[in-house]
Amino acid sequence: MKKFLLVCLVCGTVGTGFAQDLATKTDAFVMFFHAGWGKLPNTSGLTNSSADYVNELCSGVDWNFQALFRHKKFITGLLYSGYTANGKLEYSSDKILTNYIAPQIGMNIPVGSGKFDIAWNAGIGGMWYRNYSKVFEKDRKVKGSTTGVNLGLKAIYNFTQSFGVSFEIATIQASLYKTHITYHDETIKVKYPDALPLNQFTFSFGLKFSL
Image (cartoon, rainbow, N blue to C red; front, side, top):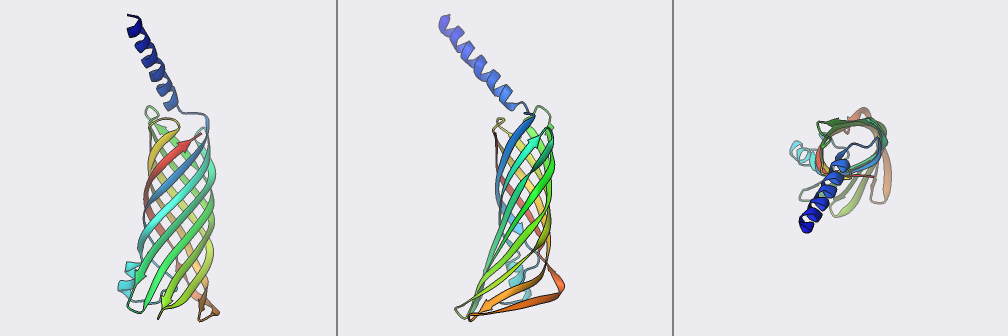
């Protein structure tokens, strides 16, 4: 009987702790780590502008890190997002890389018992575009930077208050007006009469940590 009571006490304590852990805190520091698939419909400074080659570089790998502070349902914080894609032809190759950093605002809305959340975040920040390419085995680098806006929507499942998983659909909207191209140790600046879109659309899955 004593062993049975002891087991019941332990199970009750663990169960109560788990239930309390799922309860939504008023304030929390939340981090997300995501990776997935990204699409960059337009690219800049490619070694070959044929439609088939451009389409090959339109799909790549996306990842992001988000550090957010949640007060009740409101979110503020910072987003870093990266994207990369590779392409290769007989005499040339391209490796595209973008980096985007922006402050964020948004909302986190609990659904049901607190195991599920829906959240959105948006911001305005800076995007850095790079293309590390080769032409006839010679290095060629294209660089550019611009301002963009982003919007993300997450579906979150909370195993506990401190740990969960999430799925995110997001977009970054930006336009590139000039680039610097370095080839054969010479750098030239190229301006575009019509801005080149750098709009990204991403689908990613990741982990949530909360303190």
